[in-house]
Length: 308
Image 1 (cartoon, helix red, strand yellow):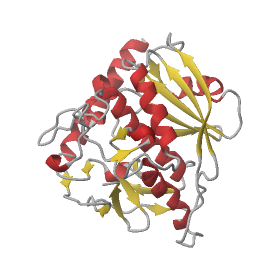
Image 2 (cartoon, rainbow, N blue to C red):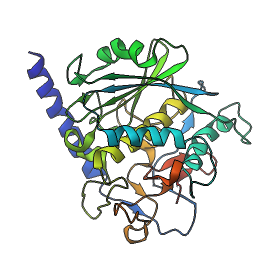
Image 3 (cartoon, one colour):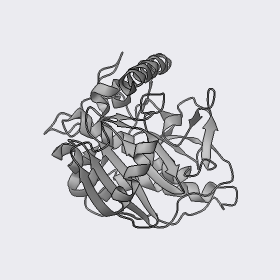
């Protein structure tokens, strides 16, 4: 019975994403020389009066299923790169995170000037390689796994990273970056979209008019980083559903990165390329690791922004 319901749900998701894909075929390509703000032709995000996540952001990770070593390395490297550090190259991943931090200054009570740093730290890490709750992560299952992810530590964001073959609830239903709240506990859920939801692996899987190789050389790893970036940005700027967002079709909403979907920082031929992998990137992290990060809404300029 569960199998039939899941098959039906997958078919509905694919149908939604087919419509979503058609709507996103028009891609904004902007030729740039340095950091620049770009506008994706979308509606503006507004603050709805609620709290944002501030201060230290402690994260507990649960690796669910057969997550590859390259995927684990990419996720760890990205999280470590969010905190400012010197000597890793420019533009740094932390410049992207600084835009997330800046939302604090643009709340209804914000001054528009200066924002406290949000320091990211992994405080717990657990493994579930045997898919203890099966290969469909619905919200009820995420709730059961929450204590394992956080290690029972209070004020900890739970990060679920699922391997290829695991269906993460709602990942293919029009919004690729997943975050939510369970009993006042924020979480982010990330899957490998390469087979389950190719549209969420943009721009690394070929689409009409554009094809970009992943900077690490593995589509799943770099797509996971993009989904994680979007999920974290949404979790910080709209953790309780009354932060920053824009209304979309029906009950859907657009958040910090989904409002800027399918925006590249430069024309394909001008994107920096890692000579080792042939992959394009728009930011550098710890030890010079290359990343391709999603465009994000910049509340200061009311426009979509990318590191390059």
